[in-house]
Amino acid sequence: MSGDGTAPAPQRHHAIDYVELTVTDLDRAKRFYADAFGWEFTDYGPDYAGFRDARRGPEESGGLRRDDSVRTGGGPLVLLFSADLDATVAAVTAAGGRVVAGPYGFPGGRRFHFTDPDGTELGVWSER
Image (cartoon, rainbow, N blue to C red):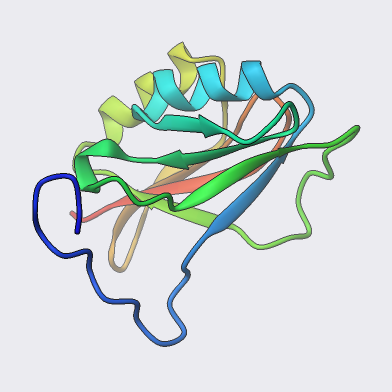
């Protein structure tokens, strides 16, 4: 059961279940993602923290893993959804992220890409 008494959503076959982001400074990364997106964290030792969006329930959707370096680009691109893309751009930049593409239109709506303070690139999209 979720914290609100409802059953958690069933897992979907071939759906992304958990995303792990590599960071060089765990505390800085937690501040960035908390400030930009309102994520909450559970620490699992000095080198790992799970994250969740409390508005969606208590289940974690990923983790931040500390390493000595981060390789920008070349890996999968994680896309987040936003109901207000312009507000999300403002939150990302205010939290210390850097917009590297967009916002721009695409057939399904609008999106932008940003890098977090460690250089990890993510994208955010919204419907039109």
